[in-house]
Every structure is written in C-alpha cells, then in structure tokens.
Image 1 (cartoon, rainbow, N blue to C red):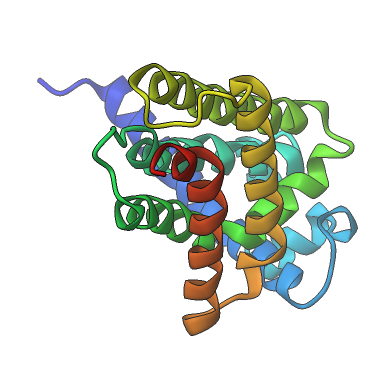
Image 2: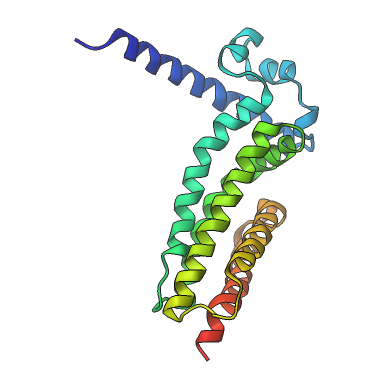
Length: 210
C-alpha cells in the first residue's frame, strides 16, 4: 500500500517547485527591466506571481531562501558541464577544449539573470554568499586538480602554479559569464567562446605543444 506520508511530501514538493518557478519568472522579468534584486519586495513578487503572501512563507523564509532553493539545483548542472573540461587528457585538441567550454558557457547562459540576482543577494545575505563561495571553491578545486594531473602527464605547462592559475581562470570566467555572456547571442556568443578557448589553451596547453 502506498505511503500516505510519502505521497503528501511529494505533493508538497511539487507545489513548492511550482511556486518557486512562478516567483523566479517574475524575478527574471523585473531584473531584465532594469531593477535590482534588493529593490524587489516580497509583496511585489507574490502579487505579480499570483501567489498569496502566506503561501510564499509556507515554502520560503525570505527572498534569499527563494534564490537558495534555485541555486542548489543549478549548481549540480553547472558542475556536470565543467567535468567535460576537467576530463580532457594528453591527446585533447584545441577543438576538444572548445567543445568542453562551449558546454560550460551554454549551460550557464540560460541562468545569467538569476545568477546576477544571486550575486546581488550575496552582498547582504550570508547564507547566499556561502553558497556562491562554495560553488566557486569547488570550481577552483576541480580545475586545480585537472592542472596538476595535466602537469604530471606533461600536457599542461609545468611552470604554472596550479592553485593560483586555477583561481585566476575560474574567477575571470565567472566575471566573463556574468558581464559578457549574459547579453550575447548568436555570432557574438560564439566569438566569446572562441576567445575563452584561446585564453585557456594558450595558458595551459599550448606551451607543451611547441
């Protein structure tokens, strides 16, 4: 016999996810219209999403909690995309690198508006800031591991300090995704991926190919 408790929990989760998606849709629209996340009140969010204030607080503690619920889901998707890059080996070509970075950029692209809201909230919400810092720490650690493995195998420049190089590349990419990729489409997006590929290739791999 099916568990009534399990079914009830599943239904609640579905309702929470539905409310979250409607609220985040409002957030995205308002941000694209030029407002900042800090300026958007809960009252306005629930009004424009067609959700009661009491329903909002059933599922979320505050606006930051709404973003945290989304961010925890999206972090896994972005980490999976980055693994294609970190899995490249000694036989990888520049085209292989571009394909891996293309996946990273295009996994991030649909979420740039809400990422902007998350970074906005991180400035004053310690719990959101902790999530962002955790994601960046994980990204730096993953790239550092790839660099060290590549140096041991001889396909990454052995003169590079692995930790500092990983930190620079990760944080530069984060700013580029936030500032450049957010508004780019079509040919411009492809050019940005070409430039990103050139920076990474020339930094990590090109010195071992000559």
